[in-house]
Image (cartoon, rainbow, N blue to C red):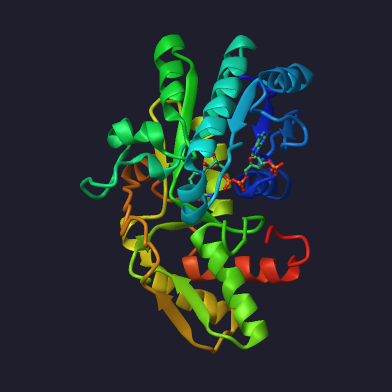
Length: 312
Ligand code: NDP
C-alpha cells in the first residue's frame, strides 16, 4: 500500500461515517501521516457533478470511502423509491467517475442487502449480487459500480452490510431504520406511559450489526482487502434475531416495563434476508462482533444522552 493516504469519506456525517470517524480518531485507526476528511452534504451536494468535482479538486484524495446516499427505512423507501433511486444513481456516478478521472487508487463503496432478490435461497452470499431487482433497489445503484470494475479494472470495491445501527443513526419514528425507530418509540412510550406499537408482526428476522464494527471492517477493507468482488459485512447467520427479540432487548436497555403491541395490518417487509458472512470469516476468523444486547444498550445510552441533537 502507498503511504501516506489521503482518505475522503463521503457521507461522513451519517451513521457509518461517524463510526469510521470514531475508529480513526479514538481507536488508533489512523496511521502516521495520513489525512482523513469526512464530508457531509453541506460540503458538496454529490447529486451535482460540478460540486462533486470541486470537492475532489479541493482535497485530491488518494482513497475514497463512499457512503453518501439517500437512506431510509422500509416505509420511507416505499414512499420515495423513485426519487431515492434517481438521486443515488447520480451520486454514485458522480463519485465514481470523478474518482476515476482523478486517479483515485481505491474506492470502497457501500451496497445494501436490499440488492438481493426477494425470492431467493438462504443464506444470501456475494455471488448473488447481480440480480435484475438490483437495478431498482431504492438506496443503491450498483450497476454503474460493477461496470467501473469491468471497464477500468480499478480496485473499486464494495462492502454489503446487513442492518446497521448505532450512535448518529436516524431515530425518526416514521423514516428511520427499524431498530433505531424502535428505540425512539420505546423511549417516548416510557416517558408518556403508553404502550409501544411495533409496525408489523415482529416475526421478520434480521442480522443487526453495530456501526462501530462496520467502521472497523470498512477500514480493514480499505487497507487489506484486495478483491474487486464485494464482501458481505455481517454477523453470523446464528446471530439473526426477530424484530420481537430486538424490541425486548430495547425494552430491557431502556427499562421499559409497559405493553408492547404488534400492528399486523402494517407491512413486515421481507421476512428474512439471512446473509452468509463466511467470506469475511475466511479473511478475519477472529474478528469479534459486539454482542447485540451490549450494542443496543450502548446505542440507547447514546440516544438518551444526545436526545436534543440526535436525528429524530
Ligand atoms: P446516513 O443516512 O446515516 O448518512 C447518509 C450520509 O450521506 C450523510 O452523511 C449525508 O449527509 C450524506 N448525503 C446524503 N445525500 C447527500 C448528497 N446529496 N450529497 C452529499 N452527501 C449526501 O446513512 P448510513 O450511514 O446509514 O449509510 C451509509 C451507506 O451505507 C449508504 O450507502 C447506505 O445505503 C449503506 N448501507 C446502510 C445500511 C444501514 O443499515 N444503515 C445497510 C447497508 C448499507 P448529511 O448528513 O449532510 O445529510
